[in-house]
Length: 463
Image (cartoon, rainbow, N blue to C red; front, side, top):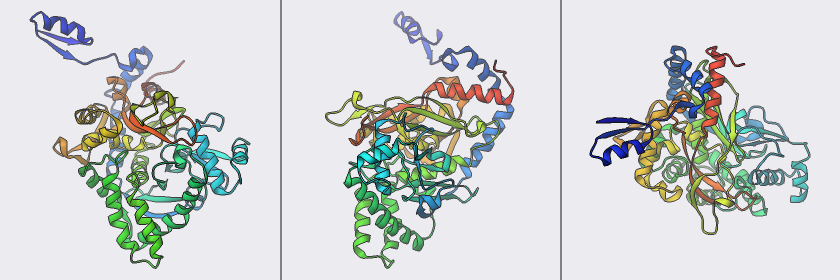
């Protein structure tokens, strides 16, 4: 009888010869990097880190995201200026941006009226006259390219437990949309309608309804088959249920209310942006705890994938973004795909999305895989998290809480990369979504974060 650690082939040989071999899945920590492994060893069973993680995780768990209102980005987002465009992922310059993000920037320039033609918009975008910054630096999140311009309406979410706020733009629906880099007149017209009608109706309804707690709504959606990242069918329906009766009691023209209802009802992803803002405000509450190895942001800009960790402040640990492995729409393949893109991995960072796929077996028809694999992803993520969120329970796993609070130490120690389900954009601007799939957060960024945390705590000294 043998316990086999490592390669399965050794155990297979024993079992084939009438022996009994128990397989233990193990790999060297830090991908075999001895320097990172030594740094990790100083942080495991480290009382300061363990205590800091308990504090950060407690703040995340106790956070209460509440939808408070809607306002124009310029007047609402901290640090926003008249010529600033916010984007998804870690900071990136215009020259480095991927095709879909550049296309979205051009669309935002046209939407703002800073240029009259696409040609002049491209020139302005590359002129150095505009300021580009990460949404995360302004308390905001945006899906895919994540572009937020000054005139765009944004949802305002407040954590009533700790007082911090987060923001997100409105979801445009499917097809040719700005977040995938489309910028033709149809896209600009829709953005203007969102600004002048959809946001107006939603704000009026919210004023009558009053503040809306998002955590219970998301919890209910998880019980109805959503995972609140790529599947938001139930959450969108629950939001409509809350807002539309209130909208009917306003003095707004019935045609505008009807158009709003039809738009929301036809867009199964409408709640996604609110889900992202809710996750952002919960995780920001956990950010900045000295010594904590808990991840508070995962984000991608189509070129780089980055994380931020609670105990290392606003430092980004970044590497090359991967192309997701998934299901492609007819006529497209991996060679057409842009690398992973968007701030929506904030959902996985908060313990839903790919971490809660066991709640959403139907999601595999969109991103690939099987219901059993969806359950497996959720169970696997429990090995790399600080704990479970009892507010987000999973029916198929006897209502256990979703695994939450990614612990950088556990990622590096186990070699298990966090799972993310995601939409896939075409690598060129304007074509849009070409599929959906599964990707993993690259191990490199977690190795770098471990080194930084160990140096900051003084457990190692870098030469």
